[in-house]
Amino acid sequence: MSLRERVEQKSHDLIWEIADQLNIDVPFFPEVYPLSPDMTFPSLCLPSRYRSIFLKAKKTKRSMYLHKPKIILSGRGTNSKGEEEGHFLHDVVTSTRKSNRTVADSFAIHALEEMWGFFCSRLVNTRRVNRFAKYGDFLPKDNSNLVHVLDCLKDSLDSDRDFVEFFVYQQGYGLGSRLALAYDRGEIPLSEIRKSFSESLNGDAEPLLKFLRLKYEVLN
Image (cartoon, rainbow, N blue to C red; front, top):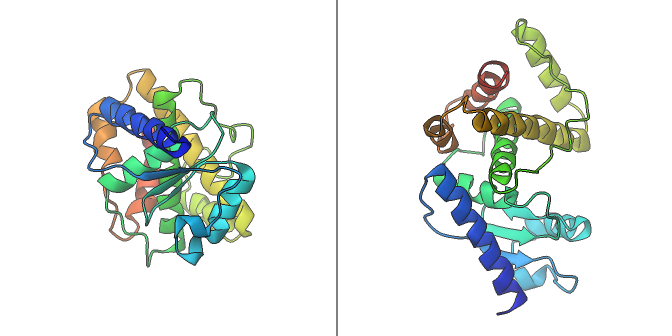
């Protein structure tokens, strides 16, 4: 068995394990490529828009999931085991529209994706740690003044690209960590998690409202 076949089988096994715990079907499996030192971008036959993502993944050795071609680039990190597999599974059981969304909805979609990725990782790696927990939350602790919450959100999304990426991960991992804890404690039933995991969010402001409800009500 080649290196790629071994890595792909391991990734598919993780998808099976996550799907089994969530009690959902796996319609198909992704192609998985190990980020080996000799791998080149042309060898993947991907559109040119993925070149920068590939180079970043190879440089950082971090696994990444590519939505459109349904491909996982598998890095060497073990702490995030199951995260990209969770992204894949969430992607194929939902049909949330990502194009032509407001800035706030786009942020919420990506933050929720990271929430599910982290949560799925925790299902197969109970020692998974939220590396963003050490930073202060850039959003208020409560939503008693919703205008203030939305103003803070707007200020964060008006920042430079690097900060917005950090902000998405901070919010997504934070929610994923809190969801995993609530699930471990039996505070949220599996049926509710499965329904939320498979939910498509295509209405205007629907992703943002779900993010706010999870952050300030369900997981507060």
